[in-house]
Length: 485
Ligand SMILES: Cc1ncc(COP(=O)(O)O)c(C=O)c1O
Image 1 (cartoon, rainbow, N blue to C red):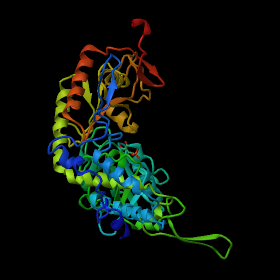
Image 2: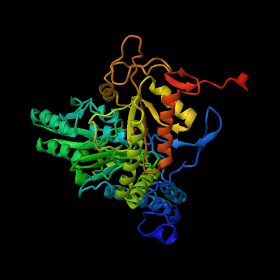
Image 3: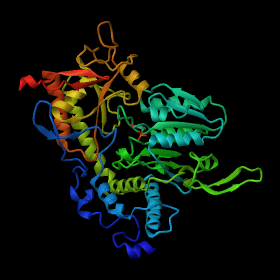
Image 4: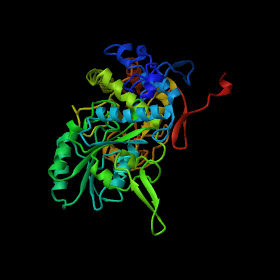
């Protein structure tokens, strides 16, 4: 290959630039048991009460910080970046090779089977919309009401059956079985999330896939929250497709993936029409234009692809594989136990759970606090403790309603009286519908979890030390009073 000879920094397998400083590799840098190095781990933030602290990023479920290793790999490749697929130049060839190699790396990471395709997309939402657009005419779709909106909403152009929230993994399988049992013949798709972005609970994906297959249905796995925490293999889970987002997998450059069975994808109209998806375009005898579309993943990747994003995603797959999921999972479970014990110490906190005590769970925990508006609580964690969590409905409105047992829509006002956790709102109480979510992952040090649980305890015991006001539906700290000196 010409680029190997010329660009010494690129190794012959074209998978990694040697300039990506091996000392910064997470597998070697922090050693077994510690957090993987991530960007922003030393960022200091001001506290509204004075002074500053190291930022505790505990909102991994929204977007995880970039692994240092991913950043280094991208930085090493960036000077060689070029257009892919059509350029004759040296860097175009190199970039094409790296782009296609990234596809192979992702395929391996996701346990793709012979004949599966890996389509690069923008993120999970895009992947699931792509699959929805590719479903054969007349496909019936089955989806639990508990899904993130990205996996709940894309199917609305089809005949969708919404399934009630199950209260155990076994109930999920039974609910699906009975829904599929009466379904008529024809193409059917089940869409299910691997780990909830609200409760962190892990769903019985393989059992659901088997149930789907028993009834002639296929299954797409939304692995946006599962893949950053657990190994995800299409082959082992027996799923037909998987969708995920790079920015939740420590690769924040705007790429996602839809991977899985090729047949429906190659039979479908391209997701976007344009260059790259078409093999041949010619004027037709009737004066129009006839197109021959690719039958590879390129069919659904029209336009110039996000080469850096795909490269970063593949770098994250390599980094996580090298770090080893056994160690990552063990460490995460320790952190989760620490966090749950800390929250259990505060009786005013109610952790939200669908499957109940003992459920298998990744590092995502949502809760409400008696007497507190969730937006107020999250604002105080940020402003007074330098801890970044999330509050709201987490793009899973039906699930939040089920978990909170409330019908309202309003997020509530800071400081307004709140209904007790678990009880429906009554007169005089704000009919709020929101919660706090704390989430973490491979880069989280113990100290962040400890600081978080200590802050929860302190806030509940002593209240906020600052005043907050509602601004555009969110609680924000009042500006300091200049007269107070
Ligand atoms: C379970 C789940 N699915 C899908 C999505 C959508 O991901 P994206 O916004 O990257 O498309 C999210 C995002 O939070 C999620 O948590």
